[in-house]
Length: 396
Figure 1 (spheres, rainbow, N blue to C red):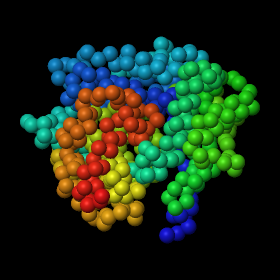
Figure 2: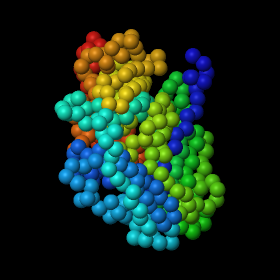
Figure 3: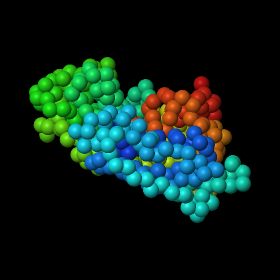
Figure 4: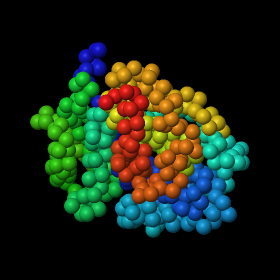
């Protein structure tokens, strides 16, 4: 093993709920939630674009009994923007003043025929492509540390903004955490970057306040040191932000949404897509399988790739990689995943096992900020197969 493998610094980025791309993801997923509430079998592919004083929805829908007519798309979009905190006209994008355009239309029958079947269990994959799931024992959530800490930092800053703890914060922000790893384990935070939209406030105050706040957030992880470098609003000014400062589009933060660059990514975005789209549902299920493998102690890292053809229920391939950390033969783990019956990667089974058509205790909109993985509220984060995996592997 090379020194690069045993000692290296890895960086991951998160963006806040007020980032333009995340505004779009939240609107798209809020519309998906509304569609599923009207028709649990709804097919949804909803895209959003935002820019200064404008929000646009486009995409394809299929709902029973003209269900789309019951959904107030503009009202949903404005409600999401209000919840995020864009309530001031001087920010160039406010929930009550932006222009709204809707280009949502009926789903193509050519696409629908790949999914719809006479029997639900025969449902085909809603698209072709490959999806990845990843897990490691680097954190209690079985996620890479850099992305988890980046998410935590921004989520807590958003809370401080909402509660008025730091009253000059505005909704748009980014964070970046770099961590030194040794032998695959996180050892120290080498640098922290925070770029946060603010009101007109002296830069020295911003840097002092945000550094102190970030130290309080990150201190419990035990990775901060006296050598940690801090970069807070490094350009010196971040007042113009959100959709006024930069346009946003659904699905443009796929690395933020997953593992912060660790492992592989098939390229498919998640938000605005119903669970018949395997680039969302199968990525969730691959995470579920990988996490259970790590939780079971079969490996300390695991990545699963699954591939589909549109209209075909059975995956074309399932590949398991443990980066050399497997406690039993890796090929045996792959056979367990594919043939033991513990997991079933057909679209209908994924939807049924994870309850993706009728979420309980969570919403798709909840996934659209601070990562789709690593939070216990989501059903693909359960480790309820770990015991069965250990038994199948012959581990005590």
